[in-house]
Image 1: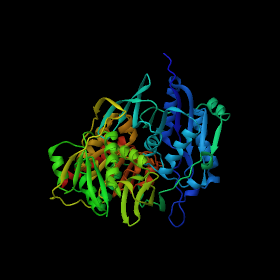
Image 2: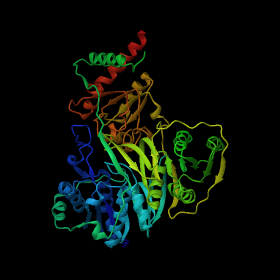
Image 3: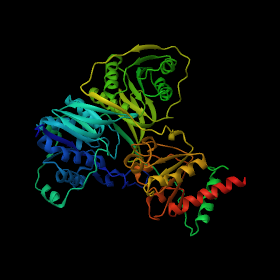
Image 4: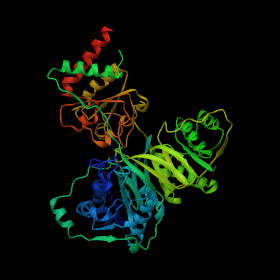
Length: 271
Length: 305
């Protein structure tokens, strides 16, 4: 049986890279020089879209909203993230880069994503996103987008079990229990890293991606006027003040004795 | 002053949340557990308690949203459980209001709330101001628990059916260990080659009076430990006096969960592992050779005193 369920939209974020945190001399976070990369869990969402695209039979679109500036300096990182989506599965990419929505604001970002989906006529049967972004980690954009589009939403999906007519059967990983749910389409799902094992795109896929369209949009194109709620007052790098004492001994016995001595002095071991 | 909605998932979370809510306005509680004891505890904070039938995010979201329209609260506060995070994302979207989870500090201002939260795997702390109304989900120990002994009022809140249908509910396999309260934690990572080998970590933990937790690959992927023993950004955040990381590389997603530890020890055979830069004491050794000797040394010390 071949179903024709329609298009899939995948939300892809170019996140600040937590492994390359840059610091200004005064201890504040140097946001301008901290690079962006595709948010890890979004790779699982893309992989799931690749798995489902046969069943859905429609197009796959990626939607990205740039939330960190400076706009000009982000072009390369942004392109890399979007091209991964295109190489992996997307037929076309939609990117909103606009000075007026930098730095991001959760309410604004969700409204912008919903506007892209509506105004660009993407008409999705399924919207997939990672449960969380690696920079802000607030777990809220997919749920917010669902309310803007008036669609059902299921977060923390650890498995998409099957397509049953125009419904999906999914497993949701909640705090103390797992639910098996039947969700009517169209719907918004956020997936966890357990949902699949993302494979990197192949060389052929990467080469093909360069021919796929990337639609660059501004708020003007979307006819949107937004009001930011959040003011970021300060961003400070947490200084790790660990002692970093290395114990290197050929004798395990000596190493163990040294460690125990240190820990006793720290007052964290009691005999 | 104004109304504050307190969303509660567990018996242990309500006290501090009501305490925080009182410093801002008049709290009402939304809760969803049915035991009589639990309801009695919630009522003892002396405010109205709205009880909903289910802890499902859709139900909680609809209930909170209904109360939001009725009470026009200044703030919604809640704990950082998956159910509450998910439900509040929906409420925030529906009403176009600011929301922040994992909040580590709060200051109330006349025209908005100022809060601090970790950012980029806790490597950066962000201070944000957001106007009322807003939703903030706070970490444990951010606020002082409210006193009990009041008389509250219980109201049943029924919300309509949702579009999502539940076919089955499966309980999770949990260890029941409360890592957040542990004073000593032995953390295990991919340096362990087989599940059976974790017995070394358990023996060490037992000897020290501690508990065992693990990284994402160990607890979530390989399932060598129950999921509630997972330490890191999507797992538990812990703050023991002593954290002993064995065969843990030191990925930011894991280290953000242990940043509150007083002393961090790392055992890893790879001298260039990032964990050594984030540890107080680093032992460069093969864990399979070192841990049995360490256990032996500790046993001897214990025997001699």
